[in-house]
Image 1 (cartoon, rainbow, N blue to C red):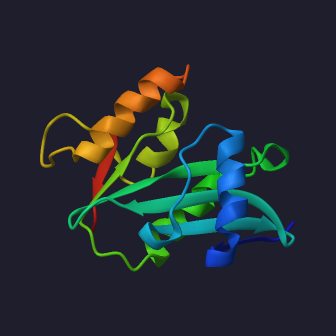
Image 2 (cartoon, helix red, strand yellow):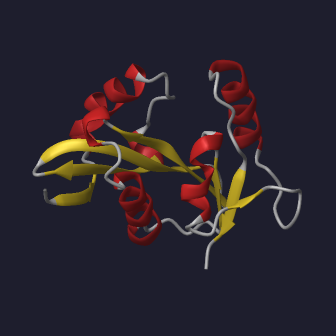
Length: 147
């Protein structure tokens, strides 16, 4: 199986949002995001995105590996692609993973937020609250300062 990760095209935004709707994720806005699509043997297998929050902050999220491709470490490859290939200049990257997936993000240098070194942007605080209401699985509040 050959895995490739690529930047999404604007023409794919409806398809992307249909996938996110299937799992109750917030939809994407192409102009405000760097979206990655994973493909196994040229067949879509997962998604992820970096969302522009403001001049200082990004959110890494929307990580979704399709059922048939779980267990192949595709999410890690999507995360790696997003962190290495994006051209966004913000210093702080926030992430709200489901708690049982937190360890994946920690491998990439994300840390649990403890009120140190960064102020949580309002958009992230609001999404954290939204996740607590809308998902039965808890989420963690992680952040990373770009290297």
